[in-house]
Length: 253
Image (cartoon, rainbow, N blue to C red; front, side, top):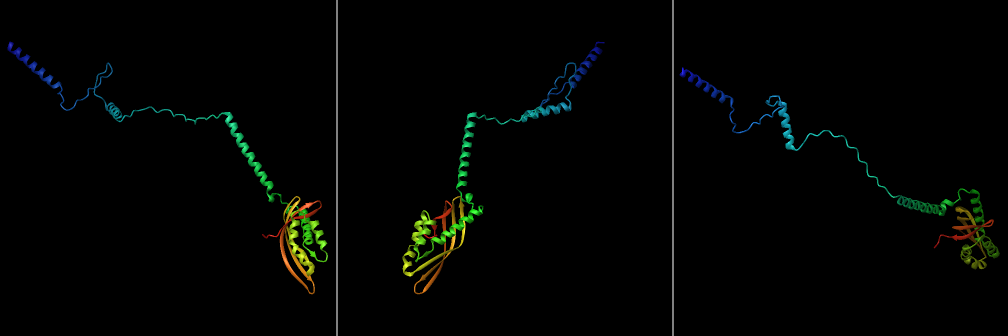
């Protein structure tokens, strides 16, 4: 009886030992498997699902690379450039300088326009006055540059009537040789204006370019006449109702 009981107890012990060996896991030698984290209370802990494992792997990758998931931030408003505030006195001072510079420039430009002969020349616009000065100067040139040995006073009277200023001395020099030779050679000098043009007409001042033919006749034993062409410019001024020659330019040094 006791033998049978002992045999049964032995078999039970052997069976319990075998069951314990089967259920107890072997200790790993190369790597350790992380234990599953316990779940919420009341739920049994179990192996992690594929999704949880993937999320955990992504977290580890982000930790290694130093990146983190950030929620999309709202667009930042554009920064406006800083406003530089200039004191009012400085602005007024700058405006005063600018206005003064503009006024000086305007005054200088206006003066240049007033002094520019092309702005004041009315030779092409005042036809009546242009014709008047041409007629008077044509008459004056013919009178003062003609000389007759038989009546020298006529030339002197013409000079007094048509010449003023610098032209008086210039006329004396130009006819000095003719006066000296006229009595001996009985010279008669005749000047005829063939063409003239008004270069400048500004109020009571004018400048004309004159083309003339001159004939010099010796009336001695045998008449001898020589001809020459002349070109010169004259400055004219108006004195009362008459135009007079104030300067003579023969274009020679």
